[in-house]
Length: 144
Figure (cartoon, rainbow, N blue to C red):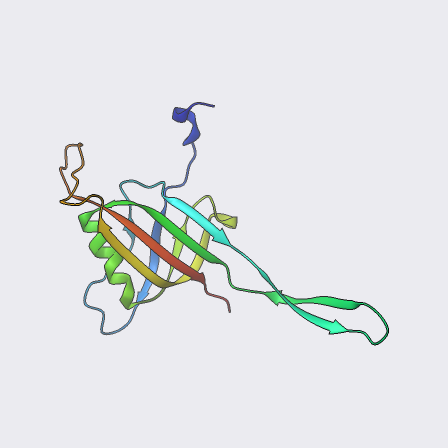
């Protein structure tokens, strides 16, 4: 497999179906990324309870799952960084990535941070000449 074929059929990362609070100042829906292949890390875990048996061994019983936590780290343009900053006023939304089972996940945005890509700024070499930023999103699955 070459790098040119690695992204064939690849789903670009994006955020959509964002529900904002009534007092939100900046709202963007969807948020799409020019550099749409960020690092997506998924953390899953189960819930267990332990029972000690008199005169026997300890039994561990699964009683459910914790919500899925997703960390997204990547590069974006300044306009997208402003949209990401506005997620503090979002109640929930849907993230899309091939890394997620089913290709999408309804989440709350636990935290979002943006920073210049480099001290003093870094500019895209493409024809848009926009400043670049790094971003980190921490998302938690919305369960019903």
